[in-house]
Length: 254
Image (spheres, rainbow, N blue to C red):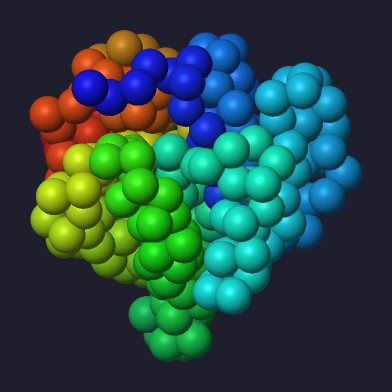
């Protein structure tokens, strides 16, 4: 029987600000213990932990560094108890500004590799570090954060979208490996969110255009996407694994 949210200990990577912070707040609201991972956003992470109270801590680690991730998970286990749930949200620095994006004429492989290292290698390192805890508990939850640009590359952010597509594939293959341990692995794929640090560079006209094309008539917020993450972590999703749920107000199909 999968434990309820208020009995989970959750690691959220890249949780110092933006969507990650919204996800951390959502879990804390439901009574979970939350580890707020950050790489450079120390002040924002500490402020969030203070806001969330005694059941939240900050843990610094670069998710592309396997040793740092292992040390981080050990610290979480010591301070909050064995982690039960991973939300891999960390994103290499990115700005969603279509006018300033790298085109195929200017794009370098290193830009794709940089995004993929955070998205896929970060997920791999975190899963490997948490696997012993999953095995000991006989259960666990992994939720990765994707993008609806994989399904609908309306703005060709080549490096970012390629990395998220690779993460979606890794989510599916990881579900097969972790299933025998009682662990589900799923992805929540968001659209443009209003507003995060990454989407702050997006012109208002683009937000308005997307809102007009979306069945719900508005651009999805970080808080709305965070609630979908809670679903995959909850007992209600115990028979769902290897799936990608697009949460963008119905703009594109999964």
